[in-house]
Length: 160
Image (cartoon, rainbow, N blue to C red; front, side):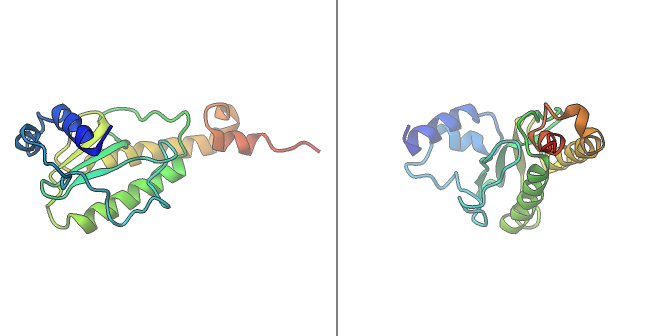
């Protein structure tokens, strides 16, 4: 799929999102809309929910597509997640958004799971849940080791 095809498909899916509605009717020939946050490189991607979580940002409208880094009004799925990395990525993403969209320029956050938000509350909600879950798992890692690879490694130390 070419970049233009992706943008056209993405625009069609997002046509109902306020600031993007007009853009969706006439997608650009070249993509000024979709931009990776400039402070994150391919060598240091956002990660945690998966090994590399994609974030797209429309600098003109202030819309951030944060993918599965944020779950709004949903319980995050975590069977293959790395909770500490995910928490680090949420913190980095919030810092990056403040740097790239200072003041009140962040207009909407679009998570992969849950409703679109007019602010970064989905990031906060996800962080609060993951922090709680991490504390619980730290206390009972032997009982949930089969669900979380990090805790499995702690539980399955070599026997001498």
